[in-house]
Image 1 (spheres, rainbow, N blue to C red):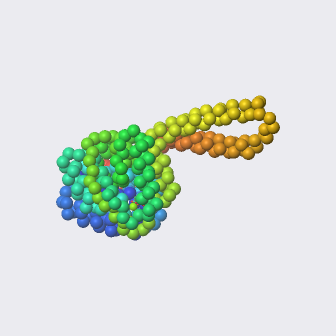
Image 2 (cartoon, rainbow, N blue to C red):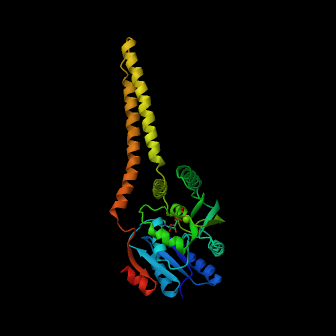
Image 3 (cartoon, rainbow, N blue to C red):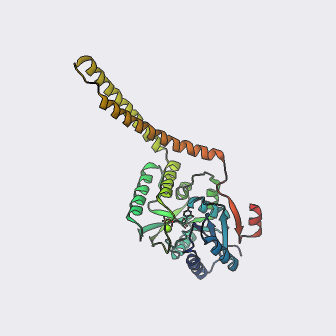
Length: 318
Ligand code: UDP
Ligand code: MG
C-alpha cells in the first residue's frame, strides 16, 4: 500500500541510537494505523549505522534506506529524503530521539486541519551545553534581524510538510541548503506545535563547532545580502574618517613645528586597515564561493544504493 506519511531520518554515525529510534518511530506510527514509510538517509556514517538499518530494512517493509557515498551533511541528507519520500505528508525528524516522536501525531492532526507546513517550536532544550543554547539563541536572533522575512525562532528541522511543499522544495536546487529557511521562504499555510526538546538518547552531537559555523554562515548568506551591505558601509565610514585624519596630519605637518613622524600611528593604521580589508574580502569571498558552487551545477548528493523502495523508484535512480 502506498504510504501516506513519509518520515525522513538523517543519520550520521548513529549506531548507538538508531535501533531505539526505529523502534520508537515504528511504535508511534503503527499505533496511528495509517500507512507510512520510514526513509533513513545514511549520510556517510563510518560506524555500524548502515548495517543496522540494512538489517531492519530486510525485516520491515515500511523501511527504506538511502545510502550516501560519503558525508554530505545534515541538510543535504534531508533533501535526499525529500527526493525519495513518496508520502502525502513528509515529516523530518532527527535520529537521536531529541525530537519526541509522539509530537509527529500532533503535527499530523494540524496537517489534517489543512496546514501545509507544521514546524516544531522548541520550548526548552534539555541536556544541551550552555554554549549550544547561547549560540543557537544568538543565531536565530541574528538571522531574524538580517533577513527580510520571518524564519520562526527556535525551530529546528523537525517539521511536517505537505506533498505540495515538498515538490516545490525539490525544485529549488541551490547547493548551500538551509532547509528551515527554504521552508519559510516558500510560504503556504504554516503553523507550529510546541514541544520540549529532549536530551540526546545516546551518543554525541554530530554537529561540532565547525559544522555549526558552516551551517550559520550558509543560513545567513543564502537569505540575506545585508552582510555585504554592512561591508560597504564599514568601508565608506572608514574611508571618510581616514580622509579626515589625513587632513589633520597635513595641517600638523604644515602649521605645527617639530612634529615627530608618527611611526606608531602609521603601523597602527596599517594593521587596522589591512585587517578590515581582509575581513571584507573574506566576506565577499563567501558570496563568490556560493556563486561558484551554483555555477558548477554538481549534483547535491551521490547515492551508493537505495533499498526498500518500489521498483520504479530504484530503477529511476540507476
Ligand atoms: N547528521 C547528519 N549529517 C551530519 C551531521 C548530523 O545526517 O553531517 C544528522 C544526525 O545524525 C542527527 C541530525 O543530523 O540525526 C542532527 O544532528 P545532531 O543531533 O548531532 O545535532 P544537534 O542535535 O546536536 O544539534
Ligand atoms: Mg541532536
